[in-house]
Length: 70
Image (cartoon, rainbow, N blue to C red; front, side, top):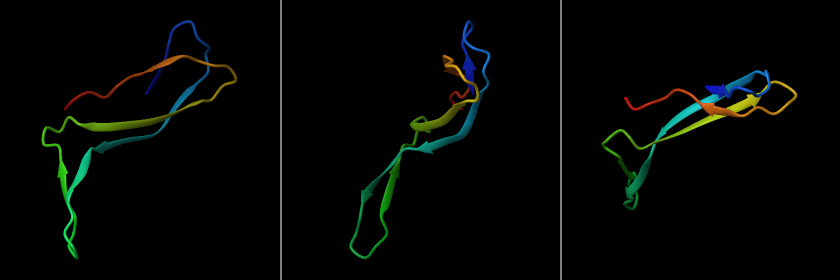
C-alpha cells in the first residue's frame, strides 16, 4: 500500500495492480524440445510491482508499506 508521509496533502493514494514474480531464467534449450527453466530455490528472489495512483490534485510523498519475507 502507498503510505502517505505526514505533512503532505490529504489526497487519496490508490494502490492498483500489485504483482509478484519469481525470478527464473532459461537454463537450456534443446532442439525440438521444451526449454528447461532454473528458478531460485531460496524463495527470496522475487520482483514486486505496484502501481500507485494519486486521486487528488496535488502531489503527495509516500512510502510503500507491507510485504516481507515468508
